Image 1 (tube, rainbow, N blue to C red):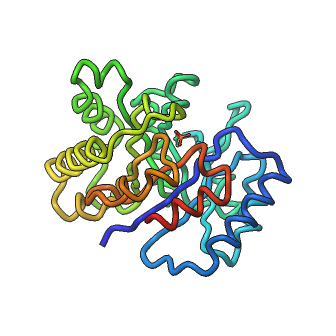
Image 2 (image 1 turned 120 degrees about the vertical axis):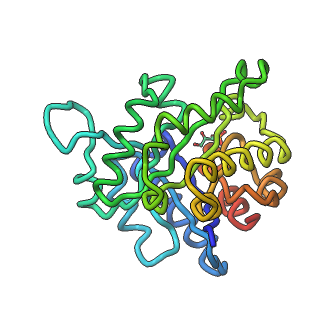
Length: 252
Ligand code: 13P
């Protein structure tokens, strides 16, 4: 049975003290919840990652990284390797976020290399993708999503998919307050599951968790999560407030 996941992508927010406060507050908010088959994830900045791992220890919160370099080590100023992440207890990495694609020029081809590095290191990836507003307006959103998955993930073998979580984030819904309707999310998630099944098999498609991201808030989470192919959310702004994030966790 595929897992439900609520993941908070903190992006470039929260200093050391704010990281501590937010993790502790989320811990308190969720300590009495029964989180059967549900994962709660936070992705703080690199600089606070190790302290976040330590703060989350013994709780249901998993700490993941927001990015990773594809090389093992070497002259890549400012970058972070899989070994570095593993050495502080990180087991999962967000890749392919639209902000990485837009502001840092990450292409599908580069992301395929990063995904390979994740798998070679026995890590998991929460792999983000999604169309631009112009793609949706021109009715090209299914093609865009299919090619993003094909270029970055469809070279993998079926067995690799136990280390893949998909996060569909339509770019027009990220940080805009404009959410995909539950019907739009379901339609795209069902399409994603169908192309994974076509490329691999039903078992892979049934087992992969597909998260929705883009302006998920306490007010809309329950309706989005009620859709059969939506297995949770990747949350930006609302993950920065413990009460909102925990309300979204409760919605699942
Ligand atoms: P918002 O929830 O702020 O729209 O951000 C979504 C996102 O980009 C999560 O990765």
